Amino acid sequence: MPDLTTTNILLGIMAVVSVLEALVVIGIGVAGWMMYKRVVALVEGLEERHIVPLRTKVDAILTDVKGVTEKVKEETERVDYAIRSTMDRVDDTADRVKANMRYKTSRMVGFIRGVRTAIEEFLHTRHQPPASAAGRI
Image (spheres, rainbow, N blue to C red):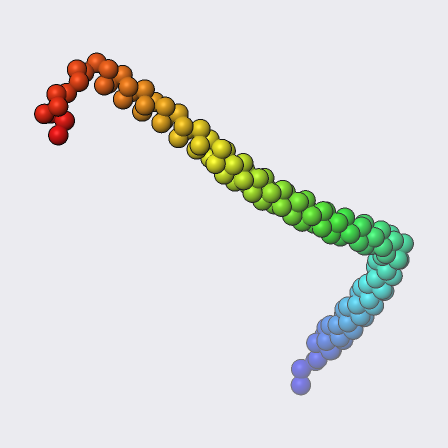
């Protein structure tokens, strides 16, 4: 039977190295878990000290902005209504003025046209000789 001493020694060394590797991997895992816990605690502390107060301020600012936006919207609607109603009244007034001007000027225009027609007829008949009695019938 061959001598297996060397083989057994090498197998023992490999087993010890495997156990050491397993312990190192477990140690790295535990160290990683501890670092993770510390980072989580640090982030929570930062959140409590900085993020929460900042968020409270931002929420207050957003609430104010929302109120201002609503107020501006209401005022814009009010001004828009005022402008529309004013424009409607201006249009109505312009229509009334136009109708009154037509009514008042139509009589004057009619009178002037009548005077003009009378003058034209007067001047037209004045330049022509009177028609004979036979031509009148």
